[in-house]
Image (cartoon, rainbow, N blue to C red; front, side, top):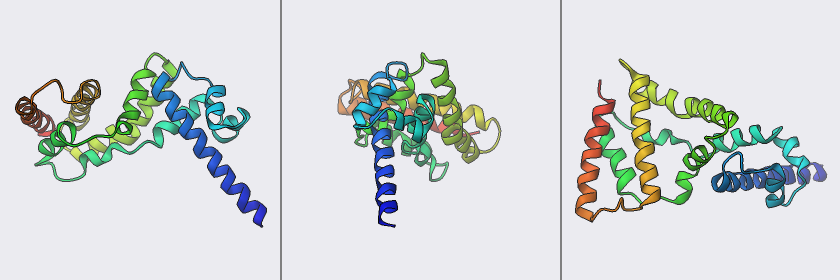
Length: 188
C-alpha cells in the first residue's frame, strides 16, 4: 500500500514537472522550437515519460494550454460595467508575467499548423464559446471575437510597453476610451 501511494505521488510530481518544463519552453520558444528531449531534460526525467503521461508533443502542448489559468474571469459579472471592469484590468491593475503565458505561447506557436489547430480548439472551448454564451443575443459569436481581439491587442501592447508609453494622464484617457470601445462591442 505504501509503495502505491509513493508511486502515485511520484507520478503526479513527474507529470507536474513535465507540464511546468513544457510551459517554460513553449513560452520562450514556441511549439516548433521545442523538443521533447528539452522538456524532459528540464524536468529531470527520461524523455519516454513524456509519451507515457501525455502521448506526444502535441498532446503535451494541448495540456499546457488547457491547464493555464482560465480566462473566463474576464466575463464574470454583469454586462453593464464590462467595459469599465476589463479596461481597468487591462490598463491599471498590476499584471504578473505568468498572466500572459498562454497568449505568448499561442503567438510564438502560430507558425505551426498543428499548434494553431490545438490553439483554436482550446480557445473555442475555454474562451470564445463561454464568452459568446455569456453575451447572448444577436451576433454573440461575432461580438465575442471582436472583444477578444481587442483584449489580445491591448495585452500584447502591455507586454511590450508596460505603461503603453503614456503619462499617467494619457494612460487614463486611453483606459476610458478602451472602456467605451469594449462596452460598445458587447452591447447589441
